[in-house]
Length: 265
Image 1 (cartoon, rainbow, N blue to C red):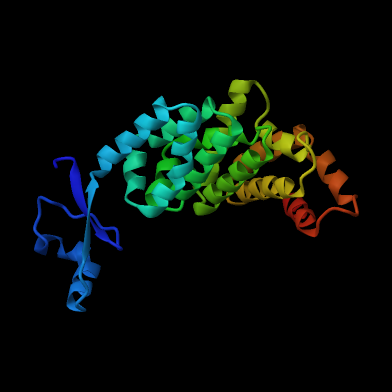
Image 2 (image 1 turned 90 degrees about the horizontal axis):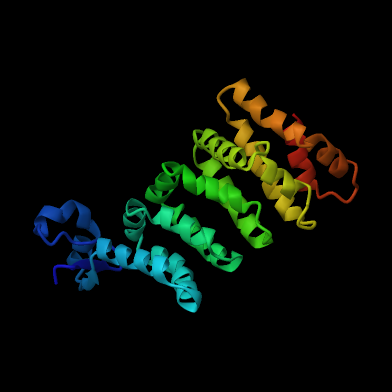
């Protein structure tokens, strides 16, 4: 029983078993409202959050094949069903676990991890966890170089969400890009240019996401030096040629054309 706790349904609040209900009244407003209306509260006996998260991490680290696939696939739903799992998962170095498991996994497994990460980033505690864990941002940028278009697309979308969340996140992304590409011995934003050069085949949606990410990143930079560090690297990698190719192509989608215009302005 010492590993168990009580959770209120359907609101999801956890009871502190060491405190009285009166002492927790501020946190249990919906519980008292239901009682006042004559509704019977439902209490669910659950394993404590820390124990549940430890069990999840243990499974992810030690499973293989179909068992690992099942564990990864169920993660998004777990975080959806119980928002309190998110801060506990982040605090227990769950993001590090994602990266380690993802580094050794194929693109299908990576996509399951990205689905779970997208759910985590919907919560303030989850996003703050990513903000404070640059390795996760580095990993997302690395995945934009994947051979799987779905993995590239999802990674770009999550990076856009990350940059849109707060202006202070743009420098964090630039730091991640510089770290990853510095290790590879290539110019910053090389993975992004591979997407724009369509090395993995033509995909307008991928081009849109890549240009949107670049534009949103540079739009909020606090100083001109940072801005030119990014754009100079992109120019050296051939951005002007790519823009010219698409702007002179009558078949270029209007939305993509708009993103190139934004970049040039």
